[in-house]
Image 1 (cartoon, helix red, strand yellow):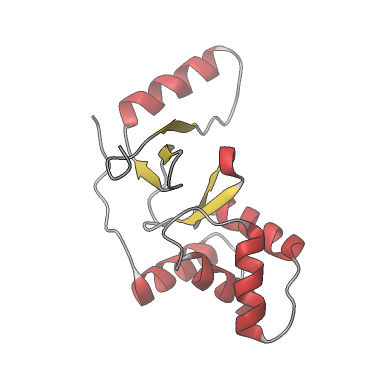
Image 2 (tube, rainbow, N blue to C red):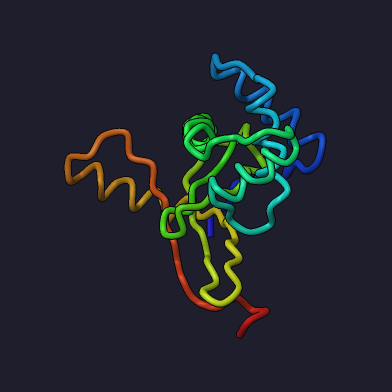
Length: 152
């Protein structure tokens, strides 16, 4: 398996890396974006915009609409700060926001854990096939469903 080698951030280091990546992308690191990212980064499993909105609302002491959270999550995905697990309509913080590559998720149907792995050979083949079919700006997201080792 061809793998990327990158630094996995966590805690304050992850927040700083996300902030730097967003600013490098020409966007602002607002208080709301920081709150949403901080909450997203606390989840070990994919989180819905509703889950995030509830926790950000508690943190801020006022209701935050899920639609606002969705817009910010879309920005985070576009700028590589978060990854979207399509089949679950849920999100995970990207622990290495400075490293742009394709996504392969292994999703446990039993406990909901989503493990992200890198395999450039596989995703490059998917990209080549899509480009051969006339698609432009291809960014593969592959999801494999099954049972994780802890649930098997």
